[in-house]
Amino acid sequence: MLIDGPVEVVLPDGTTVTSDRFTVALCTCRRSRTYPWCDTSHRPRVRPGAANDAPDPDTARENGGQP
Image (cartoon, rainbow, N blue to C red; front, side, top):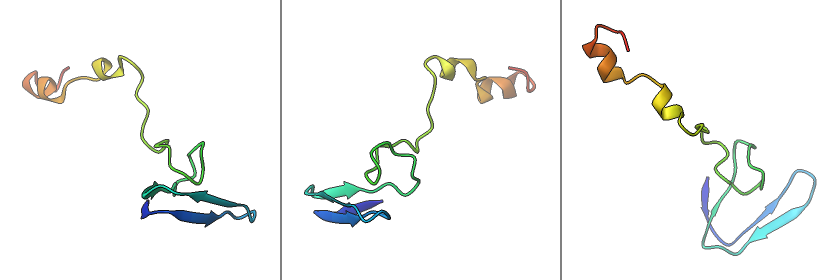
């Protein structure tokens, strides 16, 4: 979630964290290692070379469904 800054966030334990940035990305999925700030941990991770492991859907269609 992007919010115009600066912001002050009160966490459930009562701790207050602040950011003086013009725009602040807050984590809403709780996967961030820098919670409450977003570090894009919600994005799927791709193994190096994994893109080459998946069959190309266009090639599979041309070959009658076979990769």
